[in-house]
Length: 265
Image (cartoon, rainbow, N blue to C red; front, side, top):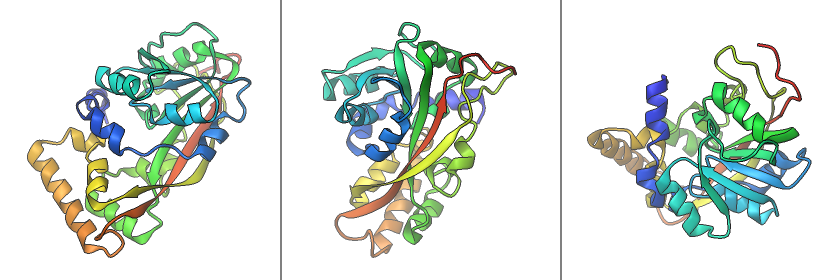
C-alpha cells in the first residue's frame, strides 16, 4: 500500500463512526494486561483511540488514560460514550502531550496506520524512560473452518493477512520500526495472542465487516456486491444461518520497550 492509499484508508472511518462504535469488538482484558505488564506506572496513552473501544478496557483495568484521535467524528463518538476521559485531537505523528508524560502507549487496530519514521520519535518523546509501546489487533480465528471460509469469501480488502492468526505475526513483527533510515526508538518485539470472541448475528457481522477500511473505500456497487457475498455465505452455514453465534477471535499483541538511546540506523 503506497502513502496515498494508506492515507485514504486511514481517513475512511469518520463517516462510519457510529457504526464503528456499535459493531467493532472490544479487546480481551488478558491481552491488555499483558501489554501493560512491564510498564512502570499507570499513565497510558490510547493513541488512535477511535471511538474508545480500547480506552474502555483500559479504564476497567484501572489505568489513568488519555485518548488521542485524529478523526473529528470518531473523537466526538468517544467523548459521547466516555465523557470522563481526557480525549484530545492529535495523531501518532503529532501527539499533544508533554515529554515523558506517560508510562505506556497502546494502539488498538491503529498502529499499522502510523508513519513510524515520524511517529516513532514522537511516541518515544512522550514515553517515560523504559516505557512500553504496544499494538493490539483483534483477529478472526481462521483456524476454525467456517471462519476460514468467511475470509476466503470476503476477500483481502475485508479480511486481510493482518486480520487472521495464521499471518498476523509476520505482518506486524516490524510494525514498530521506521521504514526509512531514521534510528529505531524501540527494542526487540514480543508477540502474544489471547482468546477473545464477540456475540454476533449474520446481520451484525456483515455490519462489522462493513466498517473495515478496505470495504469503506470501495466504490458503492463493489461494496454492496462484496457484502452480498458475505451475507449469502453466512446464510449457507449452519453455524451462522440462524440467530446469535460466537465469532471466534483472538486479541493479538505486539509489545516493545522504549530504548534509552535511539538505535543507530
